[in-house]
Length: 376
Image (spheres, helix red, strand yellow):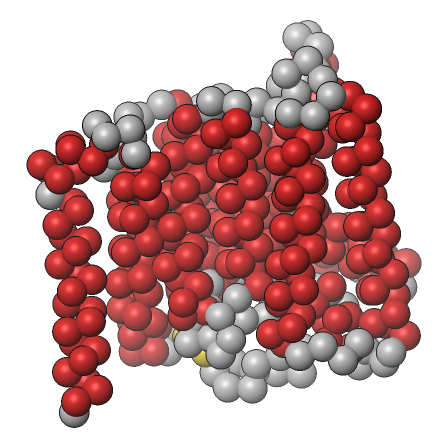
C-alpha cells in the first residue's frame, strides 16, 4: 500500500509538471527565452513517460502482445503499441510549439500513416505487399511536401531518379530499423543516438527547425526507453519501429549536408550506419543462401541472423549486446558530427574510420555465425 501511494504521488507530480509546462503563459515565457529546444525536449520527455504506462495498459486489456517463439529472444508475452506513446508525445511537442512548414506537414502526415499501418499490423497482421504499398504511399506524401533527395541534374531523368532514390532510402531505413528491433531497448536507443547526432549537426549548421524536430524525438524516445530497456515492460511494436524509422529517414533527407562537398553526403549514412549495415549484410547473406528471392519474401522474412543475434552467439548478454551496439552507433555518429565541419582531407580520414568500423562489425558477424548461431 505504501509503495502504491508513493507511485501515485510520483506520477501525479510529473503530470502536474507537464500540465504546468503546457500552460500558455509558461510556454510563451520559455519559448522566448531562446531555450525553446529545452522546452520542447521536456514536453516530449514528460508526455512520453506518462503515456507509455497508459498505452501498455490498453495493449494488455485488448490483448495486443508479442508472444515468444523460436526466433525471438524474450520468453514471456510483452505488450506492444509503445510506439503510439512516442508518436503522440512527439506530435504534441511539435504541433504546439512550432510553426507549420511544408516539410513538417509532410513528416507528420507520412509518420502518422506509418503509425496507423503499424498499429493495424500489431493488432491484426498485414501482408508484406500491403506494408510495402503503405510505405511507398507515405514516402510520396513527404515527396509532395518537398522532403526528397535533391542532388541530381535538374532535368526530367534527374527528377525521376531523385524520386526513385528517395523511395529506396525511406523504405530501406524504415525497414532497417524495424528489422533491428529485436532486443529490449535496442531500436529505441539507436533512434536516440541517431536523432542526437542530427540534433548536434543541426546546431552546428544553424538548421534550427531540424534541431527542434530531432530534440522532440529524442525526448519522446527517452521517456519511452525507461519502460523499454531490459527487462522491457512494453515494446515499440511495428507501430513504433515504422514510425521511428520513417522519421529518421525523412529528417536525414531534410538536413543540408553537402554544402558544396560531395563527401559530406555520406554523413546520414554514417549516422544511420548500424541499421544500414545490418540490413545490407543480412539481405546479402539471405540471398546467397537462397532464403529470399523477391521483395515480398525480403520484407516478410524473420530470422536470428542480425547483428545483435551474432553478438549473443559470441557470448555477450542481452544488455551487453545492446550497450555494445550503442557504442558502435555513437562512434559512427561522432564521425558524422565531426565530418560536417572537417576539411576535405580530414573528411576522407573520417570516412576511412567509418569503413574500418563497418569492417569490424562484419568480422564480428562472421565470428558470431561460426560460433553456432542456431539458425545457421
